[in-house]
Amino acid sequence: MGVYDALLLIAALPALAGPGWCSVEVVTVAERAGGREFRPQFTGQSAAVVAAVGQNASLVCEIYHLGNKSVSWVRSRDLQILSHAGVVFTADSRVSASVAGDRATSRHLLHVARLRTGDSGRYECQINTDPKMSMFFNLTVLDEPVPQTVVELQGPAEVTAALGSTVTLRCEARYEPPPRRLPLPALDIHWFKDDQPINLQSAGGGGGVLVDTRRGSARAESRLQLRAADGAAGRYTCRAAGRRAAVTLRHAPHAEGEVEAMQRDQAAAATRLALHAAPLLLAIALRLLHT
Ligand SMILES: *[C@@H]1O[C@H](CO)[C@@H](O)[C@H](O)[C@H]1NC(C)=O
Ligand SMILES: *[C@@H]1O[C@H](CO)[C@@H](O)[C@H](O)[C@H]1NC(C)=O
Ligand SMILES: *[C@@H]1O[C@H](CO)[C@@H](O)[C@H](O)[C@H]1NC(C)=O
Image: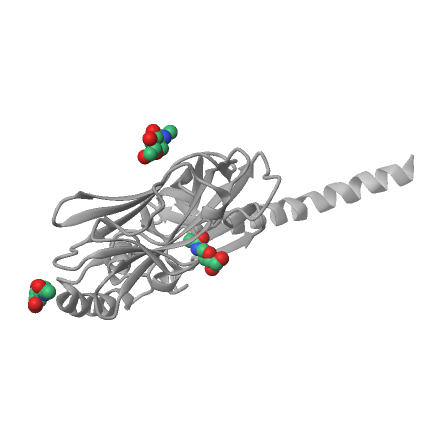
């Protein structure tokens, strides 16, 4: 995870970062950003692409500040360089490459037309920095229609929580219809708050954020547990394979301390009622004995 993500997260989730954590991390960000200013950077992360036989696939590698460096596409299976700086090196006429975007952010595309199952495998978008930089794509070509990915949050679209209470959000991602044959890329669930990734390393667990994800072959389930502290209200999104589902968290007007005090008062009232009721019950019991 990049240092930039950390900075964004702190800005978005002040209450989820532990006390005293913010200032330390911001210093680190400033130092590293200075040294990295003009180095190329991938804007995305390694990705899984699924397509059916006969379809066309395009792998998109977006790079920030490529400068005078160039991009190659390499097929991992046989380490063949498919293209370099937009020039195609393979005799396979189904393969082509293109470049789009501007000087600041360029997009380097590898196209494979009329897919065959044998095209499945890993492809590398490589920048000729020293050392080289790579981003990987797992291409899976299926000989059946590509299943849809369904992402669902369990429960209502809006959750109201008392300040200080613990909230648990549950998300499920699955392929539909269930694939007849595997492997499909494993589904992984990522959580976002107001479109910023919730990263546990940067949240440090100190903010009371917990994520528990179980991954099956064609299904994944994730639980996000957080404390409804100040600043925790907002829109929470879970994403998997480009799909998403969202839930809005709002604060209830009472803080937990007040709720506890209310519960104590109620409990005390109940005890008082029981004490007052006791002589009455005794009286009824005595009357029953007399009849
Ligand atoms: C791609 O495949 C490799 C090996 O099967 C796996 O380790 C990796 O996690 C996959 N990456 C993605 C983004 O699916
Ligand atoms: C690329 O640019 C850097 C500075 O931006 C420069 O130092 C280097 O010589 C350039 N390399 C080539 C091959 O032009
Ligand atoms: C797939 O790519 C080929 C070759 O680039 C092109 O002729 C064809 O129209 C494309 N098919 C689709 C469905 O985009």
